[in-house]
Length: 237
Image 1 (cartoon, rainbow, N blue to C red):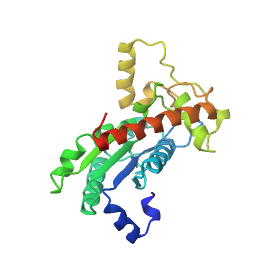
Image 2 (cartoon, rainbow, N blue to C red):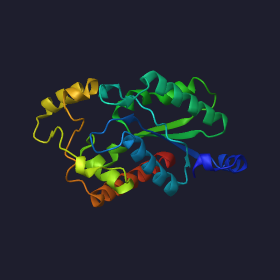
Image 3 (spheres, rainbow, N blue to C red):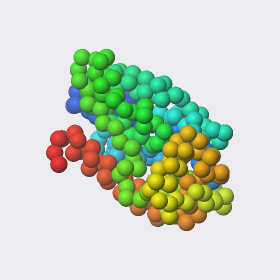
């Protein structure tokens, strides 16, 4: 149920049923020469819509801006960790005042993770009713290793968007044969400056991406998030 498409009276009826609100959080940042800068927001919005439809959640508008300063001098439209966290805390407080006491934050960008920590503690200090807040990053719900504008993201985008420019797709940093120590070193370096580890803004190989693979990856992610959210909400499993 997409909140922005509903009228007030419908929402008021839904909030009496102990509804769950789902807030997707993405980013606007470079994704190599072949994917739009909206990639993270596009992917997390699609996944959130599917999860919402399957579980009957109230789907809130996607927060399009994330913490992507590490991509400078590549294009990014970023907010600080503190700003993103403040927005999410205030949205959760607002939802609580509207009698929605369970919120799922679905994250679509690695750089947002620090902003998503301890949200429930911060909200609890501002509202009397204890709100349950669950935070998921969608890539934790798939078996494949995550990338940036590589095989995984490109395949997913091929499955959901017509904005992919496959003729411009090029390999970036391929970490497959790196030792764990070397990979950890590069991850830390990339978190500060992405261009320092991959000159074209790509982590992985997008050239073999397909619609079929994208659909399979999405199916796995969505199925696992649906199951996880149901387990958390019911306290079973």
